[in-house]
Amino acid sequence: MIEVTLPKLGESVTEARIIRWLKKVGETVEAEEPLLEIATDKVDSEVPAPAKGVLAEICVEEGQTVPVGTVLARMQPVGMKGGTPSEAPSPAPPAVTEAPVPASPTNGKGSPRIPARHGDRFYSPLVRTIAAQEGLTLMELEKIPGTGAGGRVTKNDLLAYLAQRQATPAPAPTAPSRPSSIPAVSLEDILAYLQEHFILIPRKKFIHENAEILEMDRMRRIIAENMLYSKHASPHVTSFVEADVTNLVHWRARVKEEFERKYGEKLTFTHVFVLLLAKVLREYPQLNASVEGDKIYLKKDIHLGVAVALPDNNLIVPVVRHADRLNLAGIAAVVNDLSRRARAGQLKPDEITGGTYTLSNVGTFGSIMGTPILLQPQVGIIATGAIRKVPAVVETPTGDLIGIRYKMFLSHSYDHRVIDGALGSAFARRLADYLESWDPNLPV
Image (cartoon, rainbow, N blue to C red; front, top):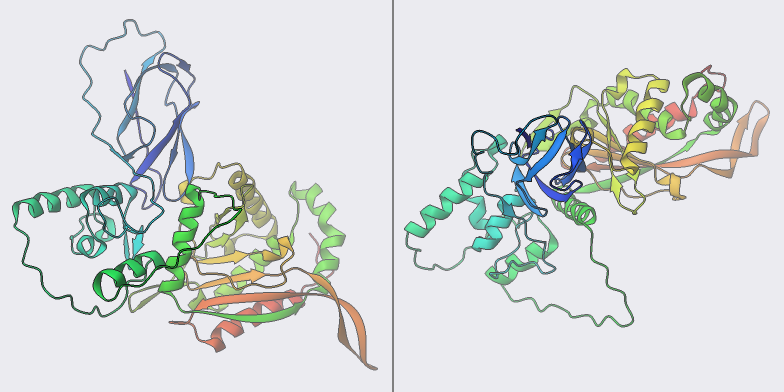
């Protein structure tokens, strides 16, 4: 009998939720054929069959969340006689069904909802589900020592704490003391905390007339949570720089067909942005960094995240690893491949983690500038606006003239805890200088 287990899904991913089984018990499955769909906090993916065989048993039902290594199913190899193995298989470890995220900031027992991230800690869906079922507050969960990677609270840590709490009588209530700082979590969590410890804030009720109610899908909830966390964790500052990209526009128009014939890839402005951005990050390593507490980590490798819009209007950020080691053709191949598979839902968890800086090309949708939000724990993100024909002053040997030029805005957001305005503006200006000095005669 062949056991199908939940595979390791990438760095920091320890569990996954079963979304849908693609095969039924008794059906024949080819080797590497998808058996089921799973979801993590980072990406959705498929689990393939390890060999050809017949699906004999499904051990984990749809909707359950289980840790890496859990036996998901058992298969009988093709040609094996008899449907029962000589030894009874050991039962799969118990799984906890992840409860859906409620619309209100409290769980079923009246305690504030536990966010996925709080400070330097990350709480998995399994841990948050158990905490919600047991009525744990965020402050109580923060006191539990974690034995997982990076001090993460595991399922066993939480169960041990619950067992100890049941055996220990609750202390007498004391007057609440004012915390040193408000947790950098969602707005709903902060309001719930204030209501519990300080004052009652009346919630304004809105009357929604003639409105269609849409439930946030799983990815939109994750995006909302991450963006709220980022705005609370980092003081954002945005600098704007305008760049004259006339030479670049004419160059691409001249070489794009030749580039596609030679390398088999369409050439876009995003590829050039990635190429030059990696070059600037080498010159300004302070932007290729992350912050943890009062320590700044300058990253040696440049792994550029490139934001990709999905067909369902959500957003995902696959990572171009070692972008500074690739030439333009290599960048075009990697970016195009990641973008295609992102829109098809075929990215692997490792392909959307580990980024050190992010590029968002808002100009693709006609925006001329924006104020992008940092992807934690990065300290910088740049948005490239739409390239437009505009009248501009052109300096010539015989004097200044008004001419038609192609121009665009660069919007650079950065973490003001570690990056000041002078450095953040200089970084964006340096990228603009490289764009403006692009050689219009550069061969492909």
